[in-house]
Length: 265
Image (cartoon, rainbow, N blue to C red; front, side, top):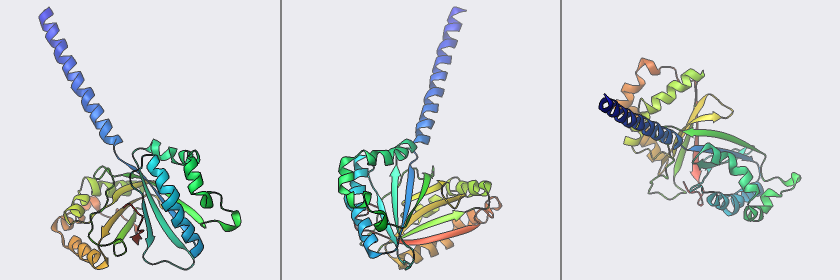
């Protein structure tokens, strides 16, 4: 009897250990999904643009590197308007805690405050921007980390395509997210070499519920070629025809961007 109890105890302990290890592994996997901060700086003048470029290059990016952020992306629209010019800054973080700590760490970074003095201490009559829009995103499980694109063209020729898909309700948004991950829409993009920087769900922003992602191309002609191949892809045709994924996008915004020479994406 004691021998049977001992065997049972051994089996139970082993089984419990396996369950705990599996649970920890799944938790670690979930925590490995990056969080992104996408900041959109709105400005009007050339002077503001120059100050922003100097700030990003000389102060912000080096300071973020000191925080452990490996790469920072800085992009400007291919076509700007005279009344509302923009620059997009993409910052990936390993966790939500790291993202939340960013601003306080910047304020405690003496080198950052010194290198970015013109921006940080700008007079209210000479602000380096009009407004800042901040969007917080979480990476999709299907691409939990951002990727630096593998392109042959120079940065001045490249086209980065930032897309935002809005949905009528949270349920439809979850359905579109499911389509990217479980339906393997991400896999279709990958097989066709869309060179994605990230795929993500917006968890805080002004157009929710929505998701956002960025793909990259050597030039505009390369972009058109890729999207034509996507539209003709048998896997995409099969996926988009499924009834379970109908009507999950109610509005789409597309912004074409160029990376700055100092951009790390």
